[in-house]
Length: 242
Image (cartoon, helix red, strand yellow):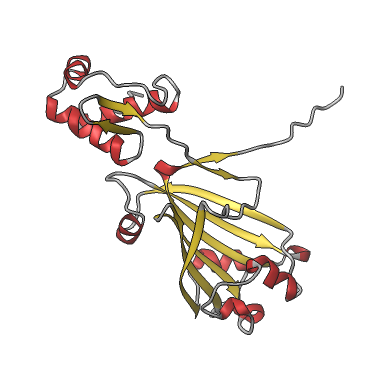
């Protein structure tokens, strides 16, 4: 079967190659990129094409320009999503901005995740996670209305101790969670809210949290710009003795 050709515009192809070199450490933080003329010669592309590629990488946070000196690789530290841990935002680095609290009939994947009956409602809390005054994540957390409607989860205010404490006080301590992670192009709202560079996909993380007896008590949809995050997986390896 013949391989499919890369039909992306040339500037996207060049940006992809430079991005790969940066992410693999071949171009380390602080390294000066070759001049535009050198990149034009290397890639056989027009000056405007090279400039377009470099702009894309600057928008994504991989490069910055130093007046009179050139273009350099930034010391970029991606946010790590540890798939094996329940992570709270680090004080001082991140903060949540609560947008809305409502009682709604949730979308189908949330209905399935929370194992709700047809027509049942859930309390939804929508928020934005902010880092250095820049939005880096959109989230919507759903709780079955039958357990959350008369709690602080249903109030439009920050929760002392967070949702885990409220659920524990209600008799539903969080025990385990399951993540489903996918990537896709952003919606218009996501692209505008997260101020995404052109062509940047989002990571969609659907997390269902279970209490005792495998009862689902929370389902959250987290949307993140893929250019800012890396996924981290840790697994204990069990060796069979033979």
